[in-house]
Length: 345
Ligand code: CA
Image (cartoon, rainbow, N blue to C red; front, top):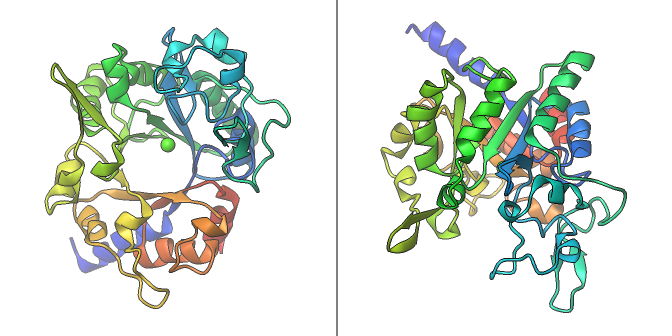
């Protein structure tokens, strides 16, 4: 490669920075509702995110948690249907049952039963009427808007807790890929990134499922710290926590690049929390991912003052640090309009 080509290659990366609407325009409307997706669409991000979980009758629906209780009225409509841990699992309800639920902004429940919004300044809880969409409905919505408005906005589905569904005897990845194939997302050129925290599952998708289905999609390895207990491993002896430690070792990114196209790290994995505005400390992971040829799509950018790291003045400043100093390829944000506006400047 000549130095001129190298220059082109590096400037290409920075001029193609993207915005991913995290759970839709979730800063403004209840996350993962079709309404939040329409609003996100109007803000013209590059991608709109879907978190995909599976029902008792094997239908794919869009919800962030594998539980229904943080964003719906399941506890009143179906009291007594919680598991021992007090949670109402999507996998224990049919699509028909889930259709009866009202969706709202995320809330916490105090011991006395009082509900409080997790984000008090967002859309008020229990106002208007929202429901849980299926994966197909959401794809049809985005593809339909691509037709009527003429933009080309992509989808960014996440396979949630594949390890959990595997343990429950369900192959959620295969079901998701089959829907994607139906809607024409089949090659690396298709307007989609497919993301997953479960590295074993993402490898299985890359090595087995995609070739068997005649597909080849851009894959994103989401990153967690082991002590988050994000992913579990089951064996006859019981369950253990999956260790993410290998990803942070010297050859970690090289190993990820064998099956994935990009990583989805958490902000503090790229920028040290001890940074100050005059001294942004970029962690080695950034360079290692670059050297391995991986794209870097970092999560999650929220505009609430308490969600802005101490080293940034405000939301735009945080974007400036990540897009222009760290030079990530993309960000997940609850406020896609603000990020689109920032990049347009
Ligand atoms: Ca997600």
